[in-house]
Length: 390
Ligand SMILES: [Fe+2]
Ligand SMILES: [Fe+2]
Image 1 (cartoon, rainbow, N blue to C red):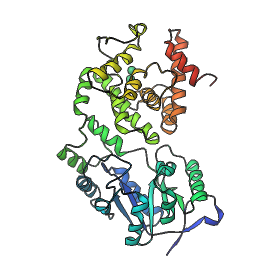
Image 2: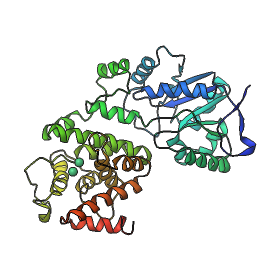
Image 3: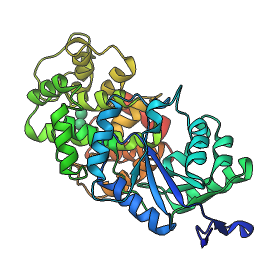
Image 4: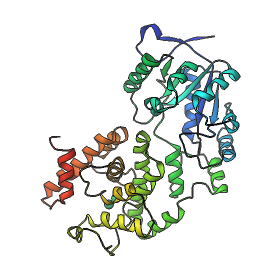
């Protein structure tokens, strides 16, 4: 057993940990991407792990896994070819929901000393896991900061979990995720965008099996209704919306569909019955019109999605989380927005949607005020609720 200096979590008595030698790296790997490999390599080095075992999730209670286990195994095998990592298909045959607190004891028995590798987002949401106090007792957790996670917030969360639940939680200091996610990669593949984060060998398997094409009809119809520039923007809104959602955890399909359809009537002359009369002839019309189009032409019945489309331009008092997400993603879209200050807005929004939305809305509202253009009443109500005095 070796003793290694680890994270600098400032708990004097725990500054040096005894380190288990096998890192368990769980995930859906749907699809696996280059960052998974980079993280495994880096974490093995940083913590001097004997090996890293990839553990594709089976019957996960948290995720609506759509890609069959065998195909995810095929993709993962292709991604890890030439590396010394192992893949353990344990969860495929696991009886019942594969909650971590149920699975880890079996792995501990199989491998001996293990550490469970999780992302910073998982640490911050640990209390939403089933039996988190059991998980930390089974084995130490190694936390990989992701995207906009800061070491300070992760250390604080780790210290609090250890104080209330016990166990050992260490934060990687030399290994960091870069906001690459499988969820975003799936959307990009569906939207026919470039995915340099996915290895060509994995892309080949995706193509072979025609993965991630559930919304191909909707995508083609929206694309056909927009200019290439507007379509490019829509793709960017989907990507940014899913990135914002990494910390929010709304159902992925809602975010995807709301972002995809948000501007579906932007370039149409048709006016649906029922749109507010005072919106006709203004820039906000396409949002009301878009919600009607989504309902009538695309068959969307989910009012949360329809509202997020309806209010993505004006905002309103009483914004739902999805309303805020679509509004904000529309403003910070990674593909086409490049106005001064957008990078800051994007960074804040990926970390903290409420704050990001408030800043985005204020920027828009101030712009409107400065130009002297008339402001739609819903926008004033929204400003008064979220931005007044900011
Ligand atoms: Fe719009
Ligand atoms: Fe838009």
